[in-house]
Image (cartoon, rainbow, N blue to C red; front, side):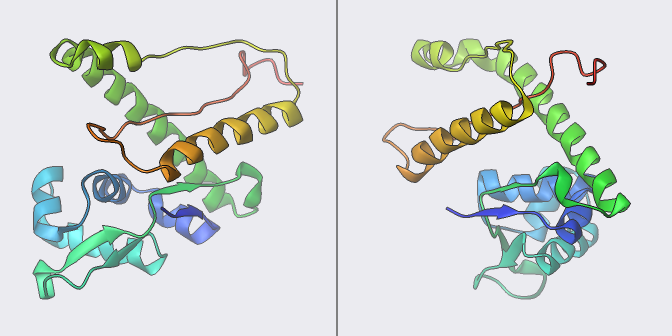
Length: 185
């Protein structure tokens, strides 16, 4: 599986409500054409096609060999992306990064709410395994960066080991931030 560090242009392109949803849909459900994506996301095929092309311009999605014309299929070019908040001097890219972070928080909350609604329908083993926790630690910025890198390395190890029989896609969100962001040093 591939990972991409977003440059400022890709960041600005991805910071759009439909584009971020299109990329997520392709990552979770695999290749699809604009018509199917438009139906799933409640939009029109023209807008979907336009935004898929914008995502392709920055290498986030690509066409497959399947289909032609409006029925051509698209796939996510990578299965994950990230960015370093200090990589961008461009104010537009910084604003886009802020929008994407807030969007990720919104998606996290939406997924957690749907999980809580559907949890009882899942086998007990899944109900126990799909959990949430938090910890408040005393760390400096370097230690937090090291912790996040180590946790991400664990995720990569599981991702690279491949799917297991009976496995389902799961989302693991890593968030490390000051406990009281208003208390800046």
